[in-house]
Length: 313
Image (cartoon, rainbow, N blue to C red; front, side, top):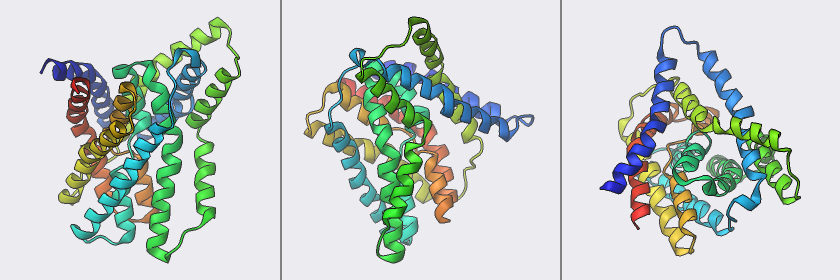
């Protein structure tokens, strides 16, 4: 019980920032465009600075093995098909809706919650693990859902669509910062101490700023009807996926820190990008919007419990 309370106390201020952002953006005088501008600043500047600075110091960070990718994305593929099965056999959804529903069960909000919470709860040593997952997350999972949708519609998929997804991912400033910082450090380069300290200071703001931005963004989503699919999706995302990741990570012999990091990422709420995919394919916008809000509320409880269980294991 003491371990659970420890992680509750540790994570409460973090989710408190999300609530603060939500309340702020819900004020009558608040303009939606301010939330968008704040999020763009954090995505384009603050988080990339933090990631570049951290990844440019490889000697200070533990190495990350390729088994991390197998453990995380292997479980994602498994849970994706579980999600499609539930969408089809329980809710009678068509192939496109099944694909978007299943994506919601595996696409974590790594940037706004996974990265800052992992750094604060597990330390800087967890950042390379999360960064590795972040680099491959959008490319792998967006490709998976795109292939699933195209197969449902046409019985085939196009390499052109995969290429466009890859180009979009590789132009993301956060991905560029991870790759650039890693290359910078691997080449044996170093920044002048004043510059490095300045970047570290900016990076120190990244976690709180990202969580506040999440709250600002959540205020733009409404909880709508279709309660059963929404709750089911939250259960798949917050319980089934972390459990599958944990079992596969243990089976592959990942280190304790790697296990904690991949399970923590898997325990994060439904990513906002899933809503963009729902809009793109014209299906489940209400269910996905509701699951984004509710899964963030539930994650404030389930994530500390998972961290405590991992610590005690």
